[in-house]
Image (cartoon, rainbow, N blue to C red; front, side, top):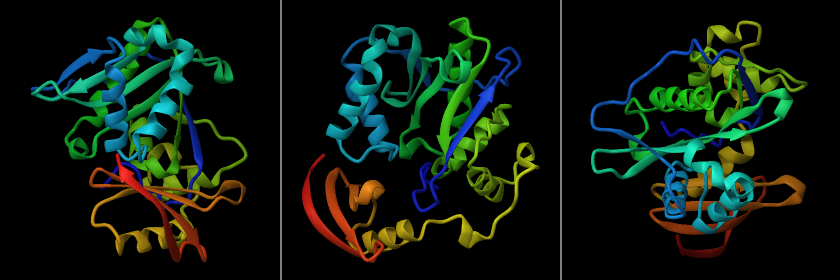
Length: 257
């Protein structure tokens, strides 16, 4: 199963961990390596990982997000951003511990990702474990993260590490996560019917895309009356407009990624 499932109804989930001294430690499998950010050459690897994880659909989009996010603390990346590499020293996963003042938490887990071909190979827990180690080595005693229902597998791993929900007005996201995981940390939330956890728009768009592409990642932008669908398929980038609640797609752009 891919780590991002866009057909699930989107809700932001915020979690916190208030003790960085007692988390579970998980070593990397044999043959894998940790390395920290070195220089601008690592930008391409960061972008490649996030495209291959399904986070972004094209390099231009990823580059813009990278600079919008990292430029304010770029000089600190060698101690905050790290990679996991395979036996050939190819970078296949990454995460960042960002400085923050969000809700009085001094740091945040950001941009954690594993490429598709390495998902399900036992790297998720070592990646989170290393992220928490980085935070502790930086002198932090607590940490916060933002995730979402569409990355519910990662959200479950955070709960396994002892993160707890920071509940705001929107509780449906936690109900969705409870329905998908039945995690003991979510006992106070409700279990929903299957039909209540999915977005019909996303289901319709995915159904139409399956008629056009064999293997793909996609994202849909519909806020403020937008109707854009972005697709990454076999190294090519496609942009569509959706109509009729996603039951009709119109191709508006295609190009190499």
